Length: 388
Image 1 (cartoon, helix red, strand yellow):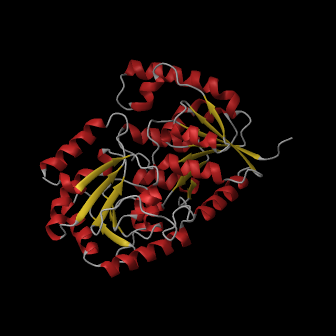
Image 2 (cartoon, one colour):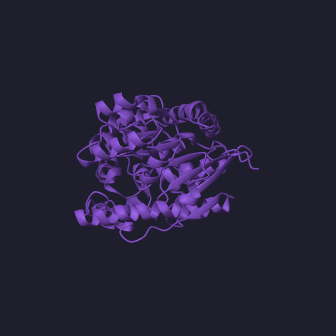
């Protein structure tokens, strides 16, 4: 008999593999298979599922039916009749996935949407259920009730920082359920992100390189980075800006508007849209400064990866970003929606080569101490075993 702890991870797949999916993939591939039997369940065979399968992870695909596809994309904008039909499809989906969850020792839900989708099963099972917040949706309007329902239904809530919990939930929710919150800082594979062994995949000769890596969505605030570019070029005309990332389904218009804005500002020759970048360590190795202009974050994985590669960071002070971007130590914090502050932060770092190197080295030290993948997985494993 297999005495390993069977952890079933429920993930609602999407076209683009974002930071949360990358982190889940690292966990699935690094978890100790002698003690754990990880199973990934998804409604679609997306890129995460394909990569997990290649790494020998057991993957089960149980398709959504009917209106659940609408539910997946437009949970809060559907009509009452559609919501009723969606509820019926949720019940049907829970019946379809029953066989995959009934032998689980622990159930892990990637986000709020996953918890709500499995709600009929979660309410009827004694199996411990983890809600991994990910970014999280702030309790406002109908989301207040959805977050409350999820908090009531699950056993544990995994967050990246206490600040994140207080930002996502109301004060009442935070106080009522704070004993369920457990902080897990996502880990970085320091062997993969090793500045001493990685060759850059971008090259502009003797010029300077500033880059970001983000999905092309309004939440990432990329328009504010674009607006900052002309101001930086006034002080440093030898800078090339790189934007790595794709537009998820439904955000193609935003991506087109970004490109038009770049051309409208007359900086097209200094900006390169790279699309999806597979070799992130190689990309980061070529940067002098990394920028994150997000309006909302947990503790962004892209920032941790940049710091692991000894690249200093200019980032908006949102969510738990200040946990890794320490002002004056590993980078510069700026106000969200402030192109002026972003431009100033970039220019100051570009003007100080010694300071850039020192902050990059401190960033690597911080990641090695607080955010290693090995430590992250060890903590995860120990916590899960306490739930059995």
